[in-house]
Length: 182
Image (cartoon, rainbow, N blue to C red; front, top):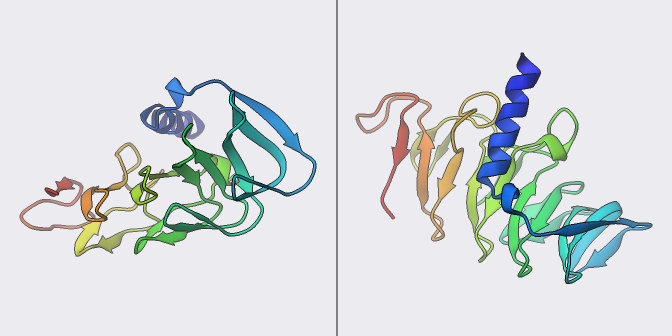
């Protein structure tokens, strides 16, 4: 039952991230660590769009992805235009002042997705534990906490958009979704 719940959560996240509408890609095996479009892709599988541009790979060293430092062995996914789309972090990572959840029982491929705007700014992450985000008590994300929610969302300006509350705040109750105007 627990495994089924995890699979359903994972599929909901994939669908909400737009995976259901992915353009055609093809997989290639990299025989050695290779820098592709400025990204240090690790030996193993990498996926490419039909035009040959990188779609995703696991990074061989810590790298800049948008405005974030992505840890080694994390998976990065790019938009067809080449901008950042999301990353599946190998470990919990601080991005724009929030600690985003990383890893999973089977590595980053099972981990929570951390999404970015085309500009590279943080769009959404699943918190690694309850945290105060820009003065708001936000609930942990992933399988514990905001399991079926939307994680923590940010406006492109960097300002907090929304999160589920980890405690009473501004006349709202624990577990309520806090939303603030841009």
